Image 1 (cartoon, rainbow, N blue to C red):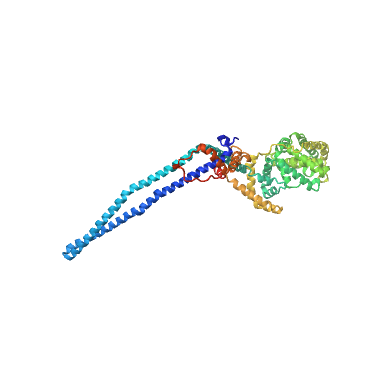
Image 2: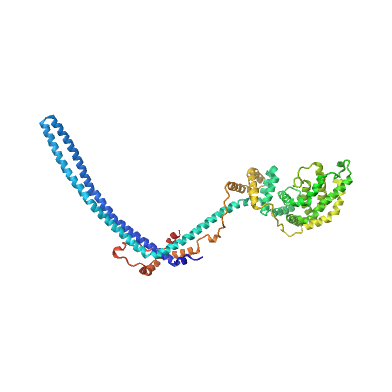
Length: 584
């Protein structure tokens, strides 16, 4: 950036000198002004006050005495007229004597008052004009001397004025930058208002998520779906599920009990697979489920329930249908969502560490127990079938699920369900292909689940997060009790504070997005030009002013005429502090 001094022809070293000279001029004119005030007081104010206090007061006193004499004369005249009516010569004599005495006093006071007033009037104009002439002369002297000083500094003043204007523009730019930064901060705070809530929901321990689900009652599945969408939009779901898988494997006592509980991580995994794999389920299973539901007869293989049906023929039909379901699943690997494959890969890697013999059954338990079988068993709740199922329709789906689940787990049917023994042949025939499917399923690079989230960040912030916030506020007391029961009391203050802040922000209008992002923090401080000029000004001392007086002054400021020289001049002050005032 071009330096201010170079733009206006003022070097940084000269700034302090110029400011010091301006200060000297200011003090000089201030001294002249004080001298002028003294002259006005001496030659105008004090004489006028003296004239008012002596001459005018004397004239007022004479006027008052004249008025009193006039009152006395009127009283004597009234007494004389009364005496004349009484025809008493003595009273008439006394009244006449008193009247003439009062008349003589009246004439004397009239003459005295007339002379005093005339004297005041005759002197007033002349003396006051003289006072004001002296005032005008002193005023003209002040203006003349001030103009001489200012004219000599005209060039410096112009350059400093230009310099100040450039500083003002820079400061205005800084103010606008600070205002933009404030607007951007307000906008960012509002835009990221839900980030602390997302961070709390994505805590690896899932204490808050678990408390929400436990206290939501019948809405727990809906709330869990909202949480999955939020975490998925923020790319947190896979990390949490993987951590949940690792902990599940570490804490389980046997491979057979893996993911058969109802932990929060397991719920998240089931909800996530169900929501992200819906299209996969539709393309893989829906047409087969529709066929079964359209004709649910001929699948019962339990002799106790078959009644008059041909159980052997039903078993053939059941095997054939189960084979069609299995074939559709085995042929669908290319359509399998990458997150599923990544979860399967991670699950197998963790299980093998503790239970090497369950390398394939762990993947089968995941993909079938938590995904395919729930969809087959309850297609109406998975969005694969419209309407409700009766017992007759659901029975073949249950039997198909049993066949597929045992195949995935590598477990044959035994005495517990002896009527299904013939399905063991189905298991033997398809075990190799199923294991190959599991191997291919998990054969993907680590962390390869690069996919499009269920909803965008804007969508979850406008729908899902406000819903979760509202539910948290509604059930806060229950959630707090659940956290206390799980020894997580320390989360309650942070949760309450976060909800209070979100409640306030939910009632304000969204701030507009600033037209541009603010500059970096380094651009927000004082410019290098101002810093350099400030350093220069602060380093200037009285010697700088002396140098200016000895070099610049003779060429720019000739001596004043003797009659126009100011009475006093303030000594030059250092420029530090003055520069700060100009900068402000």
